[in-house]
Amino acid sequence: MEDLVRRLRERGHEVEEFRLGPAAHTLDFHVDTPPYTGNAHLKLLLANYVTTSVGIVVRRRH
Image (cartoon, rainbow, N blue to C red):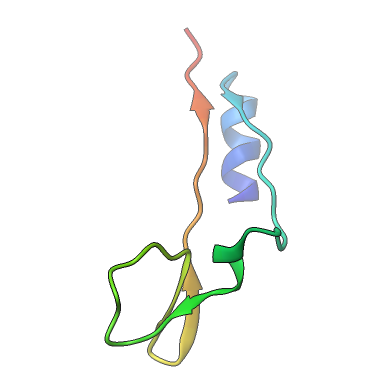
């Protein structure tokens, strides 16, 4: 992801700061396990691994 941010910036796009590391929101500490509840979660247990997702904000160069 950091490499993607670097390459996008090199091409002139505006990219919001990509932050790695723990945060303090309640959802950061919850891992949903099978059978998944369908409730809000940032992390889930998948094949014995805790997985998560990321978001990236990019403003295209005009």
